[in-house]
Amino acid sequence: MDAERGRALRQEYPMLASELARLLREHGEDGLAALVSHIRRADADGLRDLVNGLRRDRRADPYRGRREYALRLREVLDHGERALENGHADAVRDQLRRAVERVTDALTRMDDSSGIVGDGLAELVALYARACAAAPPPARSLAAWLVGMQLDGPGWPRIRLRDFATALGPAGLAECARLVEERRAVEDPGSWTATWGVRDLREQLAELSGDVDAHVSVLAENLGSTAQFVTIVTVLRASSRPVEAERWARRGLAESAHPSDTEKLRDLLVDLLLERGATDDALAVRRSVFEQVPSPDHYQRLRETAEQIGTWTSMRAAALDHLRTKAHISHVISVLRAEGLAEEAWRLALASPGDVPASQWLTLIGEREHDHPAEVIGPYRRLIDESLAGTGKTHYNQAVELLVRLRAAQRRAHDEAGFGTYLEELRLRHKRRPTLITMLDRL
Image (cartoon, rainbow, N blue to C red; front, side, top):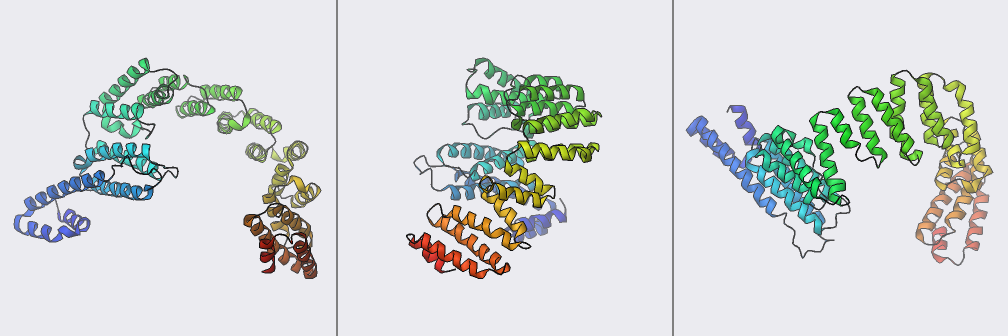
């Protein structure tokens, strides 16, 4: 131990500064070692007291006390973090494990719809994993606890074996695998434990094994979602096996029910095709989904791929024509604006005003009202009428906000008298709404 370590301890524990000085003066290195031992015990005792505060009374109202509980959990996290930074993992490791168990249990009797306590629990598990890496417990015991938390718990927290891999070592990972296979053999195939808990641990263990074929094989046992195909393709691509990755990507796209479920998988396939120089195939993938579902997102992806290949200039007009004839008007307007065709977007909106969402109208008006204020008067009044089709302060506030903007537009258009006339018409039309009339009088 050196002087720098002594300064660090004085900063971390200012209340012990005088004691540290005395011990160094009277006993030198032995005194400092004694103080460090004292601090280690203080870390353990302090954390134990904080963890005791995480016990949740079974009679407590599940909708009360969440914030206070989250603050106590944050104290545990901060204290545990300091202890690990001070090299006292062995002193606090078991208390962190007990804290994980306490919070897991508390969440069964607490409304945590905000996720604040659940997020804290995830941090706590990660902190415990760090403590285990620094001061490993018996590997078989740790393996049993991890498997039990995942398979016998309430469904949280999710156990990430990679975080515990250092502490588990080969023997601990082997014990995890044995325990998981043991449970797999006896669990009801339709139970949550089998369909998610066992499956998740088996996939994690296969990943940690480093055996790509074994990993893919385990993943391929459950192909119920596109996300599983994405994982397989990602694993194979990262392992420099692009031919197999492409085959799995195509299979996943073929088995998907709808293009909207497969965007990430399709992106991976296009990347694989471009990497091997199959530019025509990559473009065909983009064009096919765009023609099937001509959305702004698919248009943008087609454009990006075509620009990368160098063919967008020759394709742009045909892509826009397809969009104009097949897509919903709101999608066409979004693309036209992105392509710098603001005039066409405006004319299209005016031609079918009822098909354009209010949010999109506000965007179009905002882009136009400065240079063409007279042209936005009609659209503003339509939006005001739509707001006042409902009742209540929410609708009235929306209408008043629009009226303020309309008044500014009519001033720029030198038509303030027109705004006054329109406001009087509104008062007459809605004279049976006293709350609205009061709000209009304040304008």
